[in-house]
Length: 235
Image 1 (spheres, rainbow, N blue to C red):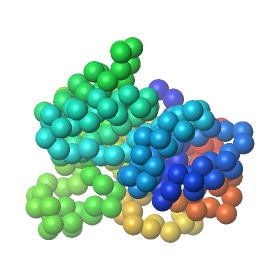
Image 2 (image 1 turned 90 degrees about the vertical axis):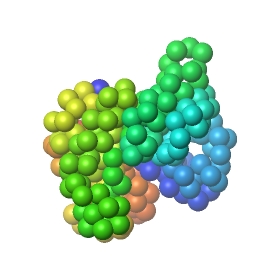
Image 3 (image 1 turned 135 degrees about the horizontal axis):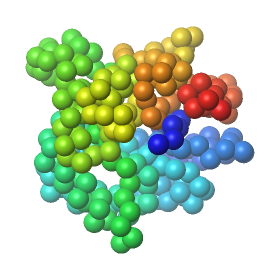
């Protein structure tokens, strides 16, 4: 599996997204389309970015009853994206249904990678206990959710880079760890609470890092992207 940097294109409009990506003359970055952009641009923005040659992580974090998730994934699979996700809290049954939907979506037998969100990188230990009423630690919760995702047949999980090694230990080296929460020491944390740098994420065991504002809000986004690639991939 090749490591890669995924740019989180969390823009409010398709026009802003295309304007941003036009800055990249020599690269076709792997990009993440999240809720904000998908709700603004719908399937058309996915199709446009695929046409332009970008790999796409469609980050919609499905979490519903198994039958609904299965039907939704069947539709999303047809958009020819490369990666999708669900919330691991939806149970093993729901995750299995999501995988079934992806397999049914394409006539050629291919499917996107599917990963499960363990805990959001904005969730602190205190919030886990006091607000979500989960008595286990963040690490124990993430490890169990990862094991559930593996049992369901998923390809990996989304976790903070600080837990990538924990996921590999619980589920094996081939089980993917896709990690947001990437910041440089000289940058603001924003709303992330469990973060680290690209180089450290590589060292810990991340397979993909998802980087948003450190690239999209940088004075020179292309240079910022190349810096992340150099530190994480070694290019």
